[in-house]
Length: 149
Figure 1 (cartoon, helix red, strand yellow):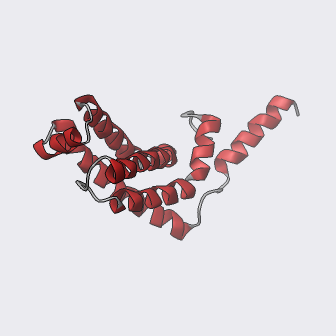
Figure 2: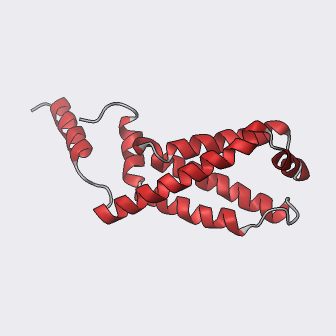
């Protein structure tokens, strides 16, 4: 057996080993990911289409129009990524970081326009999903988007 054969065998074992969560946690994560994904796809819509109150809210915090569109695209990509198995952990991490920014904005820049509790609750949920899907995130960084055997 050569070193290359050993590497191929280890990759195959990694790809086929069930190193993820148990069945109940897996189902819970998928339900949560589906709900959060739908929520963020729908919450991106007013930002991307320039709904008046959303535009006004971003103007209140002094954000440029491109930033509203950027946040909408991040939310849309994150919402879609949550329901793609290989990307769900990365999407949860990205949306966690987005919620940190949203909590900061709501606390210090929005002047009471939006509650701080909503992004903090979402942050906890995204950290939970990122933790539960960590095995997929590790696998993604090891294999990328190559098909797993």
